[in-house]
Length: 206
Image: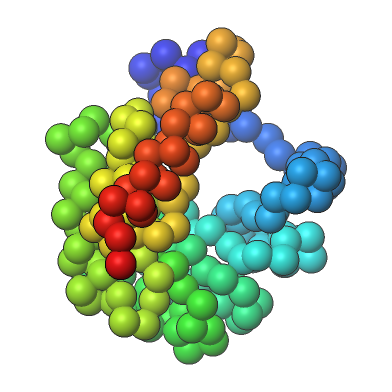
């Protein structure tokens, strides 16, 4: 269960998450039905090769793979958007990852990220978005991979310069055997997130 404290994150996801080719095809078909762009995170070259066949958008690189340069190069060679999560990385590691990916594509989104699940408000460190924008914003898009439970976080991040956002989503928070239902947004919360974000855009103006 998600409340269980012992064991590693790998143990948790090994028990609770297993999406193979069949499940990915089902998700892709559902996305097509509702006009949603399909994308998934691969963790090895074989997975990336498969996802490249069914995803038109790009690839999310998990924070744990930011320093895996051969893997980054394999992804970048697909010539699609690369979303780089930067949780636990220092600036030099982010710069090195960008250097590797940019050899093959300039379609890079740098995602500020905190690896606490969920992330408390004091740990969100949204000020890092300003630093990422100052360093890389002239060439690349800045985003936020958000694990807080605050419905204002995306609005704050937008005002600081982020324009791409990721949140964990669940259709029903009462569903059992989920590693992230606890901090995933449900449909009503997602609606509030979007409304808050749109209001921030209006208030910021031009």
